[in-house]
Length: 446
Image (cartoon, rainbow, N blue to C red; front, top):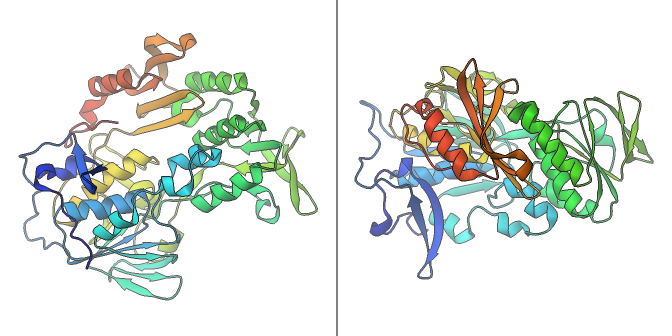
């Protein structure tokens, strides 16, 4: 019988669905600590006439899925809880893959989100190594790749993303994508014997991989269609500063040119050919040209699929069916538009709201979008929606000194804030400038 998933009374938070939760080791035991806790507040209100589900199935056991499961237990769900995941591994964190794990600073076990004992204490059934291949939304049943059918009173979709690929890459050895743990371990082994790496993709993942590989001593070329790094995430001004950072560390930048093809010899990649006709020689290639929501298995399910699983303001895709994390395209009440957020913070915060709503609460999810990236000795943190074409102005610090905070304005209105090695100042700007976006939720620390 698994240990009940409870907190010692001294650490219990009745308002836990608004808390940021972390594991801590005290007195030889694992506990959950809640910072930003607001003790004394009421539990999430139930909707009139809504009976909380007795059994819940979560499809996807990465950060969003596992966080939802933990939040369900904190909210008092004692019924059957099943997590289905295509990977055979224990749940692990993805942000360290392109940095600490790829660099060899961490072994895979350090990236695990929870220990085996903590997972056992959750009292959930884990079905690992089986992909979801179909959903019957009306019946709330999921068919797996082995032909098994799993049914529940409520289903939470947390299947995340799949990596985009280039034509011809599957037929060439030495070409990699990086989405999961197996991907990074294969790449790490390959890079140990490589000298020249080409990274295709100028976004966050591509820039992080390039920085890590350069730190390992490889000759690195970073190619991308955009004219600056991370343009879609932070715009041209900050993107240009990132380009200077990478070039200063010895990265060759080939931006503004499309990749025409991958060149191979005897079944192994030897380079990347650009639309300009130039060939970038390579012993290894990493393709980081973006991702798409993992929704292919939901065709014919009855759900509305667009850029992800389309949900209402409560992250509900259909009666008894919810979506969370990278795959969820939800209506944001504060902004009056649909958003789909691909970041670790969103996975954890959205899970708290989804779990509460599954159990009968009626709460909108109105986050301030946030992401961070670590490249070399720079920590970049962006809050809000820093549009590529927005006007950017530095409010504190100096880009030439490697520490500054900036705001993004569109039509005179602040839409985003950014900190470059200035996390505290960025949080202050966020609270001062973007708090109105969170009508129904208190600001959480980033």
